[in-house]
Length: 239
Image (cartoon, rainbow, N blue to C red):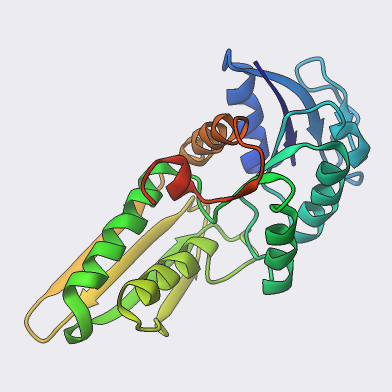
């Protein structure tokens, strides 16, 4: 059984991860973390006290982290101190922050992914194959839509899609459109357009559970690793 810690346990993603983890026999939810100024931090969650100090990570096997870049780096430091493996789904990380995570992965196993959904990782793979086959005859555009509360734009997933395309055919994608409306969970389209046809590859998230379930799959994967930086493509055997 994996002793699991979940950060941002009262947030949209952290809340769903926590609920699904409690229902999964492979996990013992040991620690739930939240920021100190959250209005509900003093109430118990499934009879667990909500921790606000990263030192509470001591004793956990894996931490799942879907929070802010600042909190992620703070918790990374504690994970290094207490030898806690990490699954990081935080978006909006700077190049320097990603570099810090990469350095930490020399000592800890870490899964870092802009999107933990199995379906979105299939989207990454299909986009790579399309970019390789279609070449320079096609113009490429990415459209992403999320809820109005999302702070970063373009989304981490859209940035990854652009990186996938560049890696596959050497072309930088400069046309990324970001939409922030209502409570959209996450929609992504990759559009390849030529003078004779248009090819669209898309994914629409209906519930956050697809990301939460993927994060738990990643936690089970990383629990068996000693060190190194991994992606969801590695987790799912798609690399």
